[in-house]
Length: 190
Image (cartoon, rainbow, N blue to C red):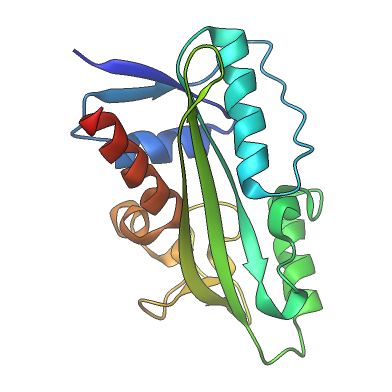
């Protein structure tokens, strides 16, 4: 029998991505019900993922999983970091701003970070973990897959952007994939 867990997001891309990673398991992730409106005022990825997980559990009365993720650029002191989704108004504006700020920068090292928190229906922490994917920022965007900063993130394992990879390739090495596999391992051993 499948176990249903609320995934604390309003982002359908993220939900699809984690269900693809979880394929072959007995776990299905669903969106939270209406009323899910967390105030992400944490100072770390871990704090924000806990805030979202507890809010999803509150509105659903179910076990909930949340992630908080972002792009950390070494030359920018880790920015945009927890503010990655609010770095500019649209996904394209965020990419344009990042490429503009890094225009003359030689140090392009960056990493995607994903913190995940699993809570029970009462909001108590069951498991927390983190996944990272290291790479660098490209000089121009390339690729049509993925979302967010994927078109400008060159993966350390190859020399393609995440947006140039298939979903399976991306899910194998992504920060979210790495964190989620740890959560799934925890759930399977529980």
